[in-house]
Picture 1: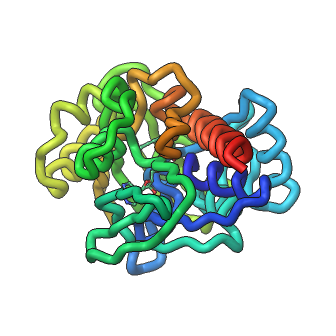
Picture 2: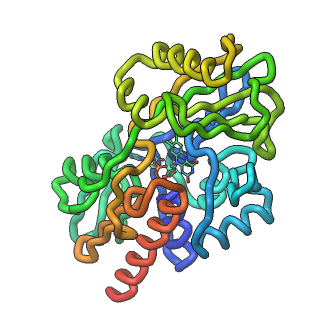
Length: 303
Ligand SMILES: Cc1cc2nc3c(=O)[nH]c(=O)nc-3n(C[C@H](O)[C@H](O)[C@H](O)COP(=O)(O)OP(=O)(O)OC[C@H]3O[C@@H](n4cnc5c(N)ncnc54)[C@H](O)[C@@H]3O)c2cc1C
């Protein structure tokens, strides 16, 4: 979301952009997993909330065009048909290179060159916006011998996410079940979200404490442990038709920077992400837009 918001804002200000993402699709933690048999799960972020005017205006436009829809009340909205939809919409028509892991940034008189894990170099670019999770921003600047202090101050909680398909009703009728204590923090019924297929698919997120305690355990062991824990919550033994676990190492921001973004006008290098402002999609959106604003002002002043 931070990268997409940066890119769209730069384009709206008249700049040309190139977007690189190491993922097979865009969206980052606004993610939808599609299994080989065609089951879909939003296994990352469950919903977005717009508190400020910036995202609210964008959300209203998404709702009008069927890219997002309300889910579960209390101003919660989801992407349609999956959580990636708003990010895909922001990037619509822009050049996006997928499965491209950027491993090095270098700057000379012509501008910035980006090198990926295959050794392919692309550039020159007038400015660079790095919108990875904070530890990955810090790793990239360190590997490139660059100074952009700040990301090392941010901290995240991990999250193990369980995806389940059941043959029968899961035993609760609400859209979601939020739990204050215990290993499971949140359970969502996927089919209750607008624009999804019918069927008894659940996504359960483990609590930060449980996820941290089991962070390095094998995926199959975590999957089985979470199935057992979810069974306790739902009061039945679960025999899922499909089950998988996904580990989000950097899931929810616990310590944010408290600044909208980082930008060094001398280097024309900046960074944005939820880690600047807080643990939510809106923070990533606002951070990306703030970074675009800094870049636009910087390039304008240099003309
Ligand atoms: C399980 C879970 C549940 C959540 N629930 C909610 C929720 O209900 N509501 C809410 O508001 N927020 C929720 N969040 C948080 C929300 O998902 C994030 O705050 C938001 O999506 C962060 O966006 P971002 O753009 O800052 O980072 P990301 O979404 O992490 O995007 C970073 C991008 O950088 C790319 N990248 C990283 N390294 C490289 C590299 N070297 N080269 C190229 N590309 C790279 C990644 O592929 C990724 O696309 C949840 C998160 C998780 C994990």
